Image (cartoon, rainbow, N blue to C red; front, side):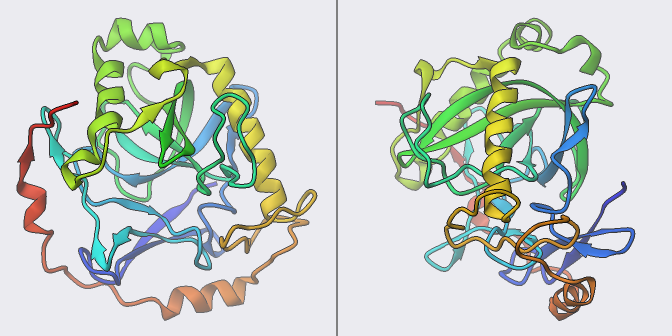
Length: 290
């Protein structure tokens, strides 16, 4: 099924949101886009929140009806990822796998830490710079287990199945062969990206080693199971403050009608041009590790 993204509000302000529609109207990108794209090929849908080389920290709003993409804030200010040598903004197309949930009520046996209450993150490493709101069919290559403020935060390494390199990339070893140094650069990006804001470097499970595709599929299966509890398809789990309302998921405990979804969309701000991004985005940082 085709999905279309609609920008609403004013970029670089707190009114900016990206909503999603299928052929029949507004939907939630977190709940109503299937996690599996092709079961036989073991591919997944990925929602792109942040295009490569951009700085605005955009993410699915897990707490609002229809879960639009919006810019994260801290202490009332919009968040931008700093440019840390040698990188400019995000170095992949960054997003999430729908219908997954890193359960904050569950301590992961691999990391010893609870989930971060978000969908599973993806780093799409193909050649194309995607657009915010793209829904891509991706192949899972491996994962990095970041520990963010004491919480498990999986980073799935994926590639768009339409990318020229997709057929050659099936393992992390393939990535290292075809894109030497990229995995090390990705790990370093996650290690240092918060340091320009005065935070300590991030830590990783497994001594920072990437896990393979087979392991990654198991993590996605587990987090999809947690999502099923979130929306009430299986034994109900505490939603942790999230909005579990779905438009299209049959049997879900928390539904929102097509009419209600259209009303939510229509209440969002009309799209207008923005004032421009924060000047801090143009700064450059050389991070010194301790």
